[in-house]
Image: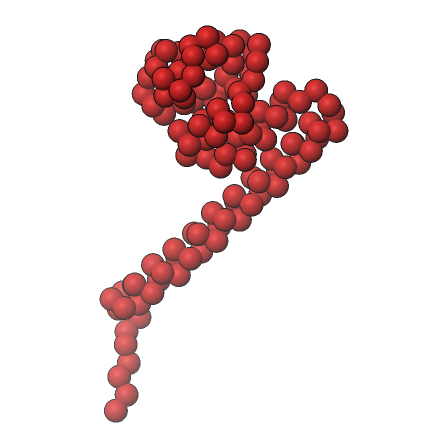
Amino acid sequence: MSKAKELLLECKVKLGIQTDYKLAQALELHTARIAEYMSGKTHPSVYTCVKIALILERDPAGVIAEIEAETEKNEKRREFWRNFLQRAKQAAKLGTLALLFTASLLGGAASDREGAFFRRRYFA
């Protein structure tokens, strides 16, 4: 299954729709264009990739890189997109870790204020 088809099917699930017609409306495309993407005849434009990314709540650069890594004819460029995609995934993981770390710090501070984890000591 092509990456474009996989992403489009994921969009259908996310939007709770079943037809290509409704998906075409959501992406502001003609139904024939959706059929071309699904069959692998053509691949989504950058504009469509960004629209897909917005629906799936993903980084648009990652979606573009996924499509380009699969469809690029030039092997050097294809490798560029693969490397770009790996770096983007690593950056996303680091961002997630940073967010979790920050949330744990904030959560710990709230617990400290409530006295859940330690007893306050008052000095005269």
